[in-house]
Length: 249
Ligand code: FER
Image 1 (cartoon, rainbow, N blue to C red):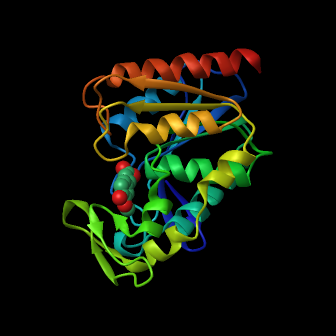
Image 2 (cartoon, rainbow, N blue to C red):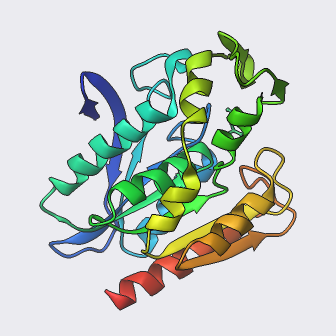
């Protein structure tokens, strides 16, 4: 299925838990930079959420997976608008009770920003290995291991997997202050981070958990950015936290 965002088709998949009543909570699950909604860790986290009774909505963001838009042209404002469109869609479903956001890496940062804008509709968030240092790195002139003059942004950057990223990505990222979004979101937060993450240093997960009003932090020993070692510990952490949230509702 597609969810429309201002003419852009976002490829999405809704799945319901095996056991459910007339209404159920829903978690929107977003992938990271160069990722897509069928990545192993995205599928595993969504399945874990369904095991504890949540519907899940996995979505390919602008320029990723089977959604419209070119990777080259994606940026964090586009992803934030995508998030708002998907949230509006989820809110329109009559079987959805509470709405949660989960995102990996750049999707985790998107979730942090979207939750601050949608405080009144987002019951809780699960930023996984959130790449919330991207704006600070863009301001310093170091992204994707590439150094550049932050006041003279290059037109293009070589991204991972042979992809090219437009310089406007950097210009947008430079304007974003995730600290403000963290300070304004008062709902419950679960942060999970591998302590051997090669793409987003674990200190960012630790620092975000410290800055949030109401965060739980689960560190995965020896694990990588996409949880190659202990994905089961990630899904256990997600299930434990979500079960606690639902028992409070
Ligand atoms: C970077 C480091 C990490 C970067 C992006 C990421 C654009 C995002 C990682 C992810 O979403 O998995 O320097 O630059």
